[in-house]
Length: 66
Image 1: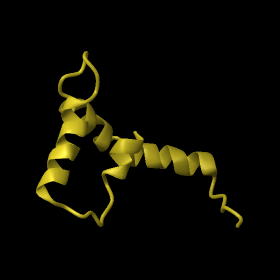
Image 2: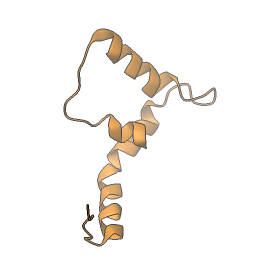
Image 3: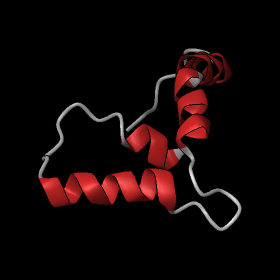
Image 4: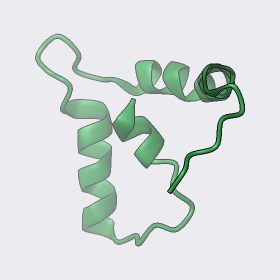
């Protein structure tokens, strides 16, 4: 989940080697029993709004004190 959310950043430096490394990590490097995680990541990505709603509900509108 952390990798998936981290991939949603708005400002990202892009170059061909970096794009290929990201593709390899996202799709090919998830263990021997998951040779292609494309579908799993897409399903998780589509559920992020629901996850954010649950997070907001759990926080109950509390504000963090610094």
